[in-house]
Image (cartoon, rainbow, N blue to C red; front, top):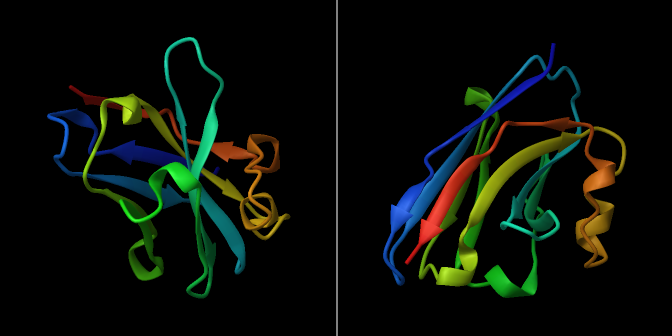
Length: 129
């Protein structure tokens, strides 16, 4: 079974940094898209960043460009989200997700679509004050 497990969330002051991790297991595809999404209380779940595997293509929504970096260590089956210069509006539950069919296309066209992603982690909370 596919399993994605996030970790690394926590509370941080504005301007600080956090690195989220996503451990991926049971995912047997050679090419796929890994994404980070977030959901604030009372809000819809929104895409944040994505990385196509294999390769170096990464995608970011405008609100996190220049502050967040997504990376993948395929040998360790891990994805990371380095978050710098955090803002209170970054407060949310963060989820990692995997998609074997759409090649990160929704992120590529600037309209991340959670419905493209079939497999999800349970989330990790990030609070910025």
